[in-house]
Every structure is written in structure tokens, then in C-alpha cells.
Length: 370
Image (tube, rainbow, N blue to C red; front, side):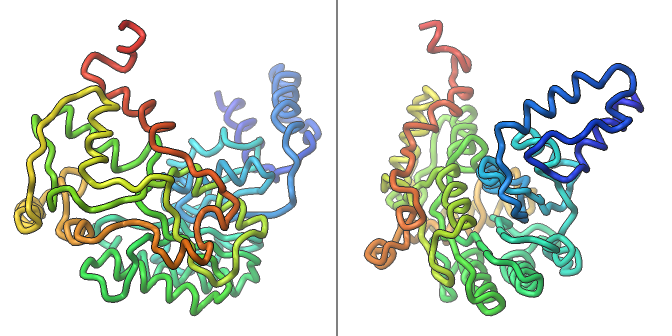
């Protein structure tokens, strides 16, 4: 076992190259020569490296992991800057041996951010929080953290900086999330005027926190809450489309200093999204209208609980009072997915049913037995 570990560590730490690396003495030990060499040649011969290094902050998260995958397919060497590199092992299979590696970085500690961007050509900041927890506050992550990344990227001579914000970012918003997202955009552009800002609507994909959360709720609860009568509009965007847009920006698309709003092909109300969720997981539930004031009381009553157990926060109730869709100005000016090379955004029906099937009352593979 120690010998196997030595081999794996040597491969993972080696610099990425599109050509098979020469066999080291470690590869020749214990009869490993042909298996490791063959594997290395097979993994690398289909990838053409472009010689550029991309640093992805939050690379092990929901949006980050898809971004890492998209960049890897285009030949970037990728440094995933995360708080827990030991929990980022799932990124390794997305590229060739040594192409993707994780380093420790925390946006609350600028020194770690500076070390992470050394030698980078492209920097992407995917870090964000939906609720403040301990030291991970909105201000610390969305504002101070964003400024730290932008400043470090500027000082390191980075060519491209991409900052992920959110639709609804507004310095005058009632929700702390939206206000700090707007302040983070300003901080980013102050430090790095050529940064490209991305504002997605709610993001869906296999690991999302929207469809999965409400499907899990439908599995346990006989009723689904329609906060604010369920009329708030959303324009869900597929995480793979966001990742493709970021890879296109890394390759040179997009106008520096511009703010792009990313939405999917459909605009749906909160109620319609819940109806889709129930349809895809094969369940029937009644809808219970919940006024905003009642939702706020519920959020206050459950505030002592950990965020993972809270159904909703006061800040999220405030966010639900405003539509979350691409603005007319962004559409008219071409500051959308199409302006970043994603001409045909992915529809909800093309992706969501597959990963919500596991919530089906009769089991994940019920349709095969029908």
C-alpha cells in the first residue's frame, strides 16, 4: 500500500503535459510499469494543452466543479482554490493526470488568495454563500473576499478575471444577499476594471439547492408552501451553460468590464417550478399559500437551527419579493448567454427529470418496471 500511495502522489503532483511523461523509477516498481504507463498515455493523447493556467476559487462547489470540467476539456491546467483541498478529490477524474490540482485558499485570508493566483492566466471567483454562518458572512465572502481575489489577480498580472454574482444584485435591495453581491461587483471592478461579471438566475443541475431541496420536501411533507402566493418569476439557468460561458470568456469572448445576466430559455413562476418538481419526482401534493409576513415569522422561529435544517431564512423571504429574471436592458444590449457564445440554453425538461427520479415514491427506476 505505501508503494501504491507513492505512485499516486508522484502522478498527481507532476506538471500537466499533453504528452506522456517518461517512466520514473516509481513506475517501474512492483510490476506497475505497463499499467501506469498505458493509463497515462491513454489519458493524455486525446487532450491538447493550451499552456494556460486557470485558477478557480470555489472549484469544488456546485458551479465550480462544472467550470473545472469545462476548462479541462479545453486544455487548461487548473488550480482549484478551495478551503478543504482534501475534500476536492472528485475533481481529479475530470482531466488528465496532473491537469487538475487543488490548493488551500480562503477568501477571508488575502495571503492565501495571493499565493493561489501566482502564475495564473485566468482567475474565476465562484465563491458565494446563501446564508451567513459563523465567520462566513455575506460581507466577508461577497465583498471583502471578492476584493481580495480581484486585487490579487491584478497584482499577479492575470489576463482574465471572471466574477460570479447574481441577478437581483442591487446596493439598495432589502436583502443582505443582494446588497453584498452588488457591493462585491463594485469592489471587483474597482480593483480589476476589466473583469467580466456574471449574474445568473437560480442555477439548476444535479447538485442544485433548488429542485433537490423541494423534491426532498415533497417526499416528507403532504403540502408545499407557496410563499407570496407563488407568483415570483424565475429564469432558471443550467450550470453547464454557465460553465461553457466562463470557458468562452477564458478563451477571449465577452467584453471586459461588462455585467452579463444569465437566464435559461423559460421564465416560470415559483408555483410553476414547484409543479414541475412534483411532476418529475412523481408525487402529488397540495399547495398552501403563505403570505410573506407568515414566511418571515417562520424564518425567525427557525433561526436558531443550523442552515441545513432551516426551511428558509429571512433574507431569502426578502429575495422572493422580487422577480429573478434577465432584464430588458441586458437583452437589448446582448449581455446574455448568447453574447458569450451559448446560443441555445438548456431547458429544465432536458436535465432535471433525470436527477429528480431518485425522489420517486416507487424508487429511482420505477419507469423501467411500468
